[in-house]
Image (tube, rainbow, N blue to C red; front, side):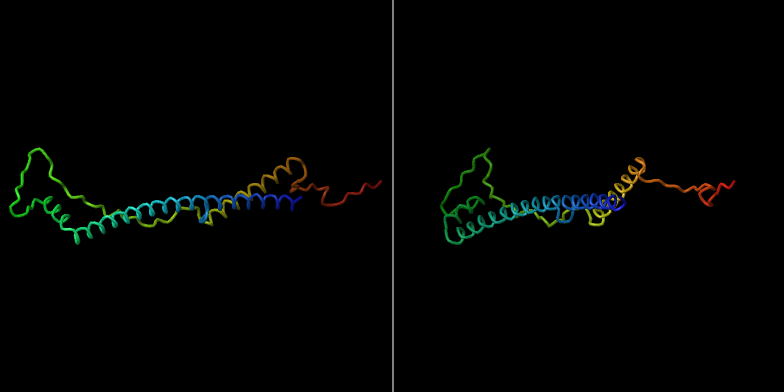
Length: 162
C-alpha cells in the first residue's frame, strides 16, 4: 500500500507540474499568446512605415519629374510665377503640407512566464500534500497504526507458572 500511495502522489504532483508548465511555462500558452500579440503589433507598425515610405517615394519621383507638382508645392508655400497675380482671401486656412509620421519605436519585449523552478516546486508540494493526505486517510481507516509506546508486557515475555 505504501508504494501505491507514493505512486499516486507522484503522478498527481507530476500532472500539476505538466499543467502549470503547459499553461504558464516559458513555451506555454500564456507566453505564446503574448508573443503573438507582440508580433501583430510589430507587423502593423511595419506596414504603416512601409505605406509612408511608398507615399514619400512617389512624391519624390513626382517632384523630380513633373514641373506642375513643383509649381503646386511652390504655390502652397506662397511663391508665384512672374506675371501671375496672387489673391488672398481672409477666413480661409492656408493649404498645409501633409506631415508624415515616421512611425513609432516598438521594441521586442520578453514574454512573462512562470519559471521552471516554480513549476517543479508547485508539483513537488502538491505531490507531498497528496501523499500525506493519503497517509491520513489510511490512518483514519485503520490500515496504518503508529505504536510508539510499548507497554512493559510487550518488552519481556511473561509466563504464567503455577
